[in-house]
Amino acid sequence: MAGLAHGGHAPVLIPILMGGSALIIGAVIDPLYGLIPFFGIFCFMLSAFFANFWRDPDRPIPRDKGVLVSPADGRVMFIRRERATGRRPSKSEIESGMCVTDALTGDWFPEPTSNPLQFETEQRFDAVPKGQESDTDVFRVAIFMSPLDVHVNRAPLAGTLHRMEHRAGKGLRRGPFVAAYKKESQYNERVRSVFKSKEGLFVEVTQISGALARTIVPWLDVDSEVRRGQRYGMIRLGSRVDLRVCAAFFTPNVCSAEEQNPEFPKGEFVQAGSSILFTPIGN
Image (cartoon, rainbow, N blue to C red; front, side, top):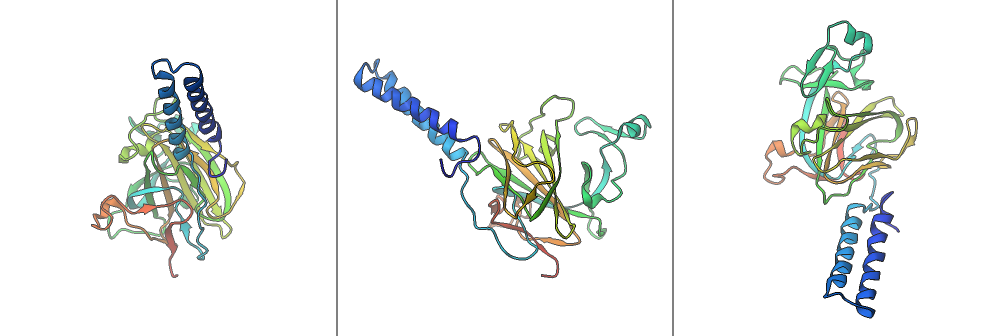
């Protein structure tokens, strides 16, 4: 069925078949006090809901040189300049006793990686005070995806899917599941993907589960070649996607909810693959 994402055909077709069968049975054999036709109508409504959720429309992909497109549909929650202040520890670093433990986020080694802009492992980022900017800073854009948005995620640039890792929430096999529109949801269950451009620039995209979304589905393997705007996975139901890029090379091209722009009171709405989030500095 055209226009549906991977895995969406069965949830759409099965309720249609069940609903059609129920209406035929109700009309030809016995409506059972109207319950069977009611069940058939409910099945059609359920199929329409699934079709809306699994929809996967084609999108025009910008051809502008060096731009980064949105990995997700939704509202821009915030745009923040950040700096790495720690990283996930190795086994030896945990045993050294130098790690810091946070009840919400887990264990951190209080130093970033040797090159924090390569996003070699998950790092802890803090906001950069105004006037203290440096070339090792990153911009983070957070996009909230409501249950009504398209949930297929797309690559922000052309290059290679360099790294991918799954992180469960602190202390739980799965979760915690803080509502995706809250800032604390960044440590929900998540899948962190790092894309590497042909020029050697790295971009980190994190698919974050929400209070309703409990399944993140990657469609590509590590080392896969990707085109700008290519589909690479999806998150089911409401959720959030964060994008981090090097602040020395890119400038944001969208408006967030935190800016309190009357034109975009809930943040600018962006579409995966077609909305430009960042433009290269100098262009």
